[in-house]
Image 1 (cartoon, rainbow, N blue to C red):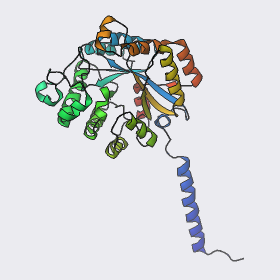
Image 2: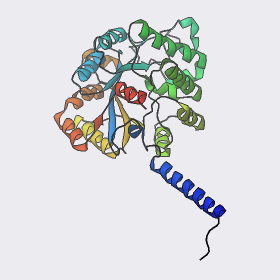
Image 3: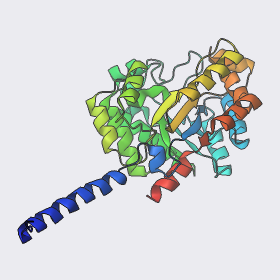
Image 4: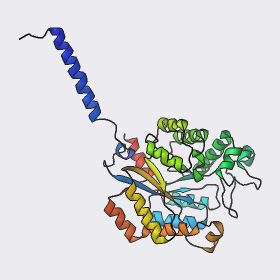
Length: 326
């Protein structure tokens, strides 16, 4: 039998070491989802039930506070330019364990219930419509506002909250405006990192998530995908909305079907709760959906469904706590 030379033995040892190293790297590869990266159990659906539009009106404030106080939802965000925003900021100050962020607002979509910018109007003329309010639609913002004006206004909203004594737990975007152009996304993520306030950024490495968002009307291109990849704070694996229902029963059933369809990972589900009043009915024709969205999250059947599905709930406070330990 031929005895291998010393050089051959060294070569074999080198190859063996490289192979072993590759196997170990594969074994400790990055977790598949952000939920797993943050230390949640593998294979679990981790959900944030998130109420938008706090501050828009008293009806939204009452509903959102009720849901948070009863631990029926995990998160909410305030529209700071709106008439009832400061009272909800005070509620958040009085309830420091609640996860309340800012619903950064660049549009004013209702016909009779409207608002202007937080910043000096002279600094953001492209954000203002002929009535002196924010534009009603996202396309009008895109056609008229510069990225500099966008940054001035969303920075002013964050600074206003801080000046009122409240550090927002997160930031997101009303009507998806800050996801409507790559330059807006860049500013959105830039301020999130500057203030160390997490944005509702979405991991866009999954093509099915990108396709879902495109089908929902968001112009997700390679530049936006690259910005999401470079973003340094935690991200969601998925984001979606409570579905519309012709009846309350249909709405709840469709919502449960939606939950069943989720892949494991960290998902934020957005909705817009309000208590029913005659005033709410004058503001928005979506009032019935908003009223049902208060009722459904205290519905014993839905709560039982969450338990049977093994859903884990979280919020941005816990997410940032876990992220800081990585």
